[in-house]
Structures are given as C-alpha cells and as structure tokens.
Length: 533
Image (cartoon, rainbow, N blue to C red; front, side, top):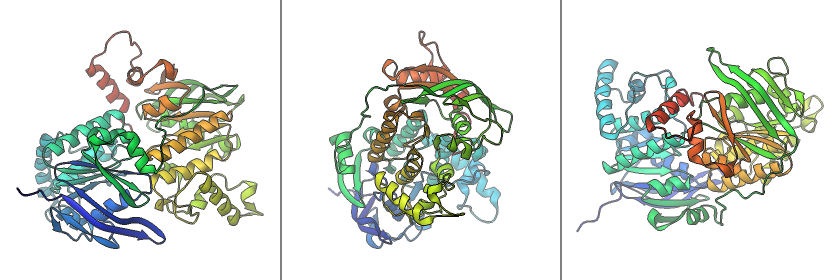
C-alpha cells in the first residue's frame, strides 16, 4: 500500500525582516483534498508563511515540496505554474475592468485579446457550473459586492488551473450570508479534489469547515491537530499562550444623561440617492449602543456624519449643544474639539496612512494639540514618546514607533487606531467594525477597552456586521435597513433570528416569512454594499 504524498510540505521555513523574525523553522504538511486551517494571533507569521509559498517572499532557509517534489518558488508565476492560487484579504482586482477582463489579466494567450476573452468566457461558464461560482462575466468589478468580488478571485485561480488554493482571512469583509455561501463553495471545491489552506482568526469557521488545523504563535508552529479532536477553547489557548475569555465580561450598564441625540437625520449622496432617511437615535453616558445591519444600509453614512466626513440635514446635539451639519464647523477637526473620537470602519483607507510611521499615525487629527507642539513646529520627540506609551498600553507588536503602518499586522494596525482615539478621553466614541480581521487575543483586548471606556461613563456608538459582537458588547441594539432604524432591542430580549429579520426589513415577527422574501429583502439591502471597501 503506497501512502499519498502531501499536496504541500514545508520544511524548516525561516524568514526575518530586519530584527523581526516572522517565521522560525516552520514545518507543515497539508494533505490533498482537504481544508487545512492556519490560525494564530495577528503578527504570528501566517500571512508571511503563505506569501513564501506563493512566491511573494523568498525564505531565508527551508524547502518547499509540492506533491512530493521539491519545488523552487522564486515568484508568483512559479507558484501559479506549480498549481497554487491565492485569494488575498484585500482583493487584487482592477475596479473599472469587467469580471472577464480581470480573470484573464496576466494570463492572455497572446497579443490579440478577443480570442483570450472568448476562451475565458467558455471556461468561466464551465467553472461556474462545476463549482457553483456563478458571476456575471460582463459586470464591472466596481458594480458588484465583495462576495461576488471574492468569487472572481477564486475563479481567477481556477482559470489558471490551480489545484491548491490559499485564502487569507476570506470572510473579513463578508456578511454572514456571504460567508456561508463561501463555505458551501469551499466544500464543493474540496469534494472535487482541490486542496485549500484557510487562514482565519475566527474559531467558529475553523471548527465548521476545516479537516485539520495548525496553530502559529510568534513566528513558530505550536501545534497541528485534527479539527474533530480539538475545541475552540483549546485552540484559543494554543494561539495566545494563555486561557482566553471567549465571551465579553461586563457588568450591567448604568446609563446617565443623554450625550448624543439625533433627530430626523438625512443624507443624500452625490448621485441623489437618500442614504439616511430620517434617523432618530440617542446614546447615553455609560452605555454602548450597537448598530446592526447588512453593510450598505446607512451605517457607514451615520458614522461619517457624526465623525465630520459627510454632511447631512436634521438635528444632532452633543451634551445638549447642536453640531454643525453643513457649515465650516462640520469637519472632523471640529468634531474632535467637541469630544468625539472616531475609529473608522476601514483602518487602511480612513484610519491610517500606510506608508507613514506608527508615531506619525498616532498624531493624525491631534497634531495641533499643545502637547505635540514646540512653538510653531511639531515636537516629534514628544509624539514618539507618547506613541511608545500607547503601544505598551495597547500591546502593539512589535512596539516600534518608527515602523511603517503597512508593516504591522491588521490587528496591530487596529490597536494603533484604537489607542489614538480612546486615549483622547472622548465624551463619545464612534467605533466602526472594531475587530474586523483581528485575532481572538486582540478581540478580547479590544472588547475590554470598549467596556472599560463605557464604565468610565463615556457614550459609545458601535457599528459591526458581526451579530455575535453586537449582542455581546451592546447595552441597546438599533437595527438599520435601507437608511432607517427598524427598531431597538435589548440584547437579553432578542436573538440573532429576530435581528436577522429586522436586518431584512421585516418587522412583523408574529407570522412566518418565506426564505425567498427574506433573501429578496437582503439582496435589496446589500445590493451596493461594500463598494467603498
């Protein structure tokens, strides 16, 4: 009886970036026709390891075997030739190209584009039928949601005849319904003999879809186990090196005076579409109000108006004083002076300048503060010292103020933004998607910081597409659909099912509703969701 060779085997892989050892003597075997999960804290080295396998980085030491054969992978073209495809967390698509054009980009059959397009169209229809990856070939990428964009990335890899697929945090920007559909597709790919490596920080996804899971911590491989023989608690401890609380530990809220009072807030976008249709909402001191909803239903616009990024009409008061919604005092700087701090939904586009150093990013928006000034100039030494203190308090790794933001993992980028905003002692904290793409240890820490701020008597408005997070953190929940608040609920008196119906625009829960009705409403709700991502 002959044993089956691993689809992938890495032996003794090491990689350093200056003083940072990203991977240290890592060995891993992935069997063909399986879904193999890789988990670890942000900065554990997961993405670096997969980037070596895909040819983006060259290992300092170690060997790669594909199907039992030693294989050199100096670049991504070599990886593709070896049958490896990779779907990145931040998609590599040209937004003003069609689906078909993106799929053949870099894989054209010659100078004449038309034969390549014809061949790709026929191949696309066949792949869609085989794997349930149906997309509109002639749709522009900018006109489809992220769920469909992710299908395009998978189709790109399959079109190039990939037998091995690497997915890096694939559900970080997906709604729960889109994530479920993705997992059905992955299950189908596995049944057809494809080998899948799934990098994720979500333990529920690991338990639901993988066959085997490997755990990384601080650049080293700490364990590989069969998924059926482990538990979320054990995996969390292996990831972090200590016991992790998988629930939010908080005492009942003690709401005080109204801090934020919104009445009749409306927003119309540049195309004349009404994004907010008369929002009424209050947030009190000492409470977390969570906003639930399918992305694209006005939550982003609500945060943008409150944060000074967008203008609107209606009435907003903060601590009893009106906020300017259309004039020269409606910008972010004015909001910060009034005591509003804002953690935006997209940390890379709105929260950080990726090429700038950490100490520069911690000063953004607050660089006019007296503590950061030396006469008419910025006191750079003071900013660096303050950044070092913030990095220590928020456990940013590595704690190097001079490191560019782009060189931190996603979770540590998020901690930099949170440290900048929370440490300003705001009256109102706006938080958009606080733990998107963040590992379990960092999630626990971020949740603790939000609850601690609430317990200090601060008002917090939380937007998240994660219903578990909304239910766990919120003291009150408002559900948005199509630019309106459909209703408010107390977490102890509702569940994901009821919130899901409200998110689909259905308020009458006394009568059953068909799956078709709910899906139609959700499609309407999320039709243009995530275009900004």
